[in-house]
Image (tube, rainbow over all chains, first blue to last red; front, side, top):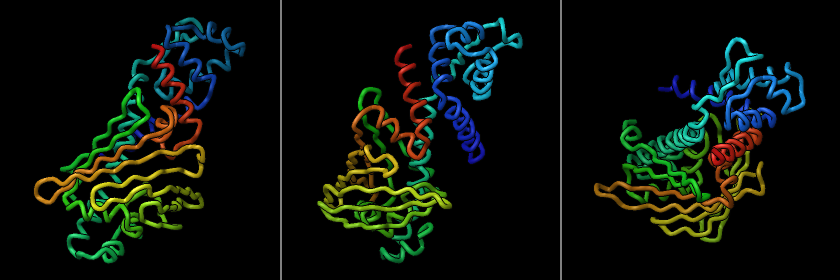
Length: 127
Length: 161
């Protein structure tokens, strides 16, 4: 459970890093309307094919796009999974809230045992 | 604790309202849940991310009062502040919330504590942001600005599709 949460977080970090760049966000937006070749993308941004390939590599490593080995000719494809990102983002937020509330469960349990506010706080997490 | 396993947190993020709703049940009377929100020592024992220690700067828990606390992870410090708009023991807490790293952002939080059978309590926490973008930033809380912008861009992209 903890391991899979960490894996999801790591994956999200790569996605966030990939989307933090405006050119890469624009590439994603462009690919949402349809596949495009590297040279089509290069023409759209007035940058070198090497620069486009570099951006695509980051997007690919984040799992946002896929392309064939023959990257100069074959079209770049936006992974459908990207449209689940908002859902994952909310799930991560939910997990953080759940972690907080499990600590609150402990605080409340200590309150039950001692019936004392200060004692519960002293026994609490990191207080 | 298996108490946590029994009561999963539910999150509702409406598509077209700048709102986040959290629902969670607790095996404790609402007087205790209320106290754990307004007593500074108790609050610092559970609020904030797990790997961060938080200390109260000031905490004036009354209607019209205010609060501020500072969380630190290594040398990084994150400060949060807000006003207690209304404290109505043991059923309702209304407060504002601002992360000082994003000073223009403010949300209004309405916490409602409903008594359940067996001395348990249902917490409903609704956070209302100024815009959908601010709400998204709130959900992405603690992340880099670029990340939030990336997501806003992605939201626009998804809306276009």
